[in-house]
Image 1: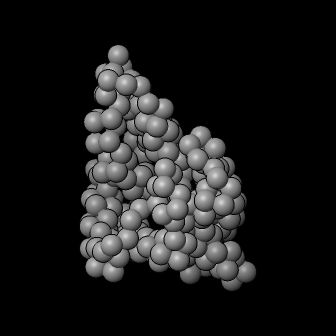
Image 2: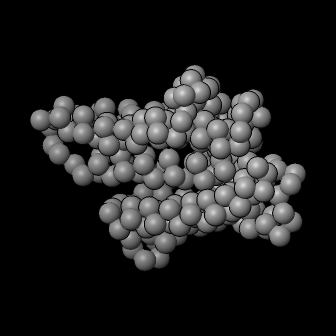
Length: 230
C-alpha cells in the first residue's frame, strides 16, 4: 500500500513533465540532454544560493505552516532576493541553446522545473510517501511540482522577453513587474497565508491560481512579441 501511494505521488509529479516534453515538440528536437544540462545549471545556482543564505542568514529559520509566528516579512523578502540568481542561470541556459524562442523557453523552463523536483521533492517523497501512514501532504507536494512547471515556464518566458532588443518600450515595465512578482512569489504566498490564515489545500489553491493567472498574462505578452518577431 505504501509503495502504491509512492507510485501515485511519483506519477502525479512526473507525468506532466512527460506530457509537456512529448506534446510541445521537444522530443522531435532530441532536447532531453539539453533539459538535463539546464538542470545541471539549476543545481549550480542552488549551490550558490545556499552559500549566500548561509553567509548572510545563518540563523534564520524557515517559515512553517505549523509555526506561523516564525514569519518575518522583511527577512523573507531579503531571502527571496537571492532567488534573482535564478534569472541569471536561466539567461545563461537560453544563451547556450540554438533555436527559436519557444524552444529555448521550453527547454530551459522544463529542465529547471525538473531539476527542482528531483533535488527538492524526490527524496522527501521517497522517504515520506513510503511511510506506514497515509498523509495528504505528499499529494500536495506532487501538485506543487505541477504548479512549478507553470511557474518556471513563465519565469523563463519573461527572461527571454527581457533579453529581446525588439521588445516594445511600453511592455518593459510590465515585464519587469511580472519578473518581480514571480521572483517574490514565495514571500507573497507566505504573507497571504500568514494574514488570511490559509494553509494546506487552500494555500495550494491560491498558489495554483496565482501561478496560472501570471502565466496567462505572460503568455499574452509573449504571444504578441513572438508574432512581431516572426
